[in-house]
Amino acid sequence: MSPSSSGARGSSEPRSGRDPVAAVLVVSRLRLGDGVLLVVDPAAGPPTSLALVVRAVLPDPSALPSEPATLDRAPGTAPEVVLTVTGDALGIHPDDLQPFLIRPAADDVIAATIREVALDLVRRTAGEIDEPERARLGAMLVRLVAALLAGRPVDEWPDSDPRRLLRLRVAFDVRAHLGDPGLGAGVVARRLGVSERSVHLAFADGGETVGRLVRRLRAERARIDLTAAPPGAVARPAVARRWAIRDLE
Image (cartoon, rainbow, N blue to C red):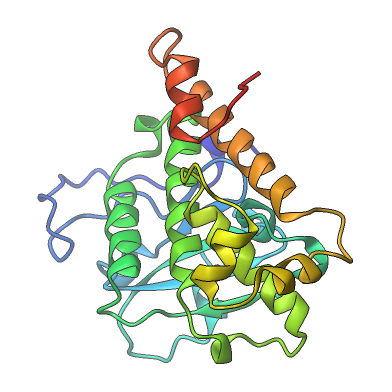
């Protein structure tokens, strides 16, 4: 099913401004490129919180909007934006992914930004957002999600394998800092408060080093930027500088 036909639901009611409390939600579910899905239930009212789901693959859009009901939301609680992101979109190796759900605190700045971006999107009809724009917006949300996850305390992660946990934290940190020209194992290790040797050891039994992870995710982000813009609107050297890529093919 293509993104343009992924179950978006429209409304003939007039929009009532950009205030989340007053806004009419005209899209119930929206795929944003590969690995990113927004879901809201317009019938439940304007969402005031965020539920973040990380899983191996996106759910079948035809099975939605049942997705919010599967997240153990207590009856009578406030409606929420449900953002599902795949591990692949976050740069997580499949062997390292255990599906999880988090509900960030309402005062979390990054979570509030994600929620506001999502609310802006779900107020729009699906036809207003073409596929390249969806990919660009999806990539932006993935980067915000990575920053949110990178900052969560270690003891909140449901994983007892220290190497796998460290690989997850590294992947989130790399996603959140792709534009940093000096991004590498040493820089990431200092941010995470661990030794560079432990970072390398965490990746020693996998098929990808930290350096390869950085190069792969940067190339993916550059491709999205180039395809989202009209022909000739974005110069390749500018995209290369934005994502610290020396040789952009």
